[in-house]
Image 1 (cartoon, rainbow, N blue to C red):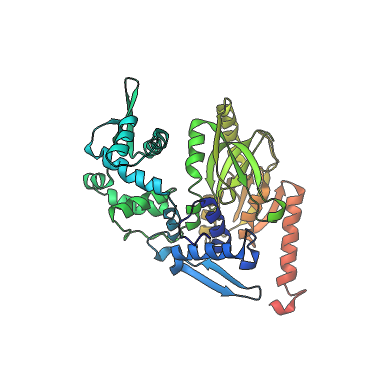
Image 2 (tube, rainbow, N blue to C red; image 1 turned 120 degrees about the vertical axis):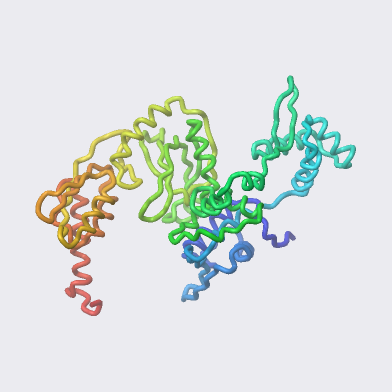
Length: 424
């Protein structure tokens, strides 16, 4: 019977578990429906070994929930980075790593046959050429090994680009690594370099740091490479609203990736893409996406990209509504009240947050926002933060205005004292 190990082979499984149980903190042990209760215990112990200092336990009638409790403004390193350092390796992986680097340590170039013969004769390790070729190909892609042809023969040599040398050569590079290891996408790369060189981030602390993005970073290289190469991609998405048993494998998606978008309201990241089967643009949350695979080169990528660029000025957030490739919408106007003498900060906020809309002064203490967006619901979510200052709403879909008025009436009934007097 296999024993418990802190190392993992399938990062997707661990990513789902950390997200559902530890980040959102909304699932309990009884909600775990993947295999057995013992599997739950193993996964829980594994994550606790990585981030045990940041665990929070809450007991309720339903049971005990476990979540991560982190004040990002007081930690120097994202604790979720540890998940990337827990990958398991086979004995051959470890053995070949040290032996190949030892063989190429002299700085000379060697052929595949030379390396395989050296392994067999000098190190008494029997490896076939295909196994060694695969490992050399992997290390070439990662930059550990450099390959080059001499005639028709491929030669391999060890790369002599070391992080320590670059840090000594370029002043301030160590501080740049400290900063970008916590702020930018793929910060795990910067964190790995810091660990390798023995440097700690003792300078930068991020107050609003969305640490969950770390679990999505594993998808970004394939997405960005596909965008750069103008290729399609395929992936599966899972909905948090649908039960697992009704959609166990998720929904298969084949799209043309356009751009990665970040919500300034929630911090969530989305992939904006074109769906050829539906002939429309849409956005997908990265935290609900599974393994991304690159597809074929899209011959019409540039044409679709132009249509995407023409659509973006009509997106207040990340939603493209239910429209097809292009289209027009009915303009919507919202008038806000702001005391020009005492509330300049309100006017500044309207100007700062108007995004793709147009703001103009239409009277004393009155400012009108004109919007031409695909999904007015996104605009209304933002507008509700100005409750008490909205003078009138014009244009747009009737359903949007009616829903807004219904929400205001419902709030008035709840907090105005007509129905629930005890709430006041």
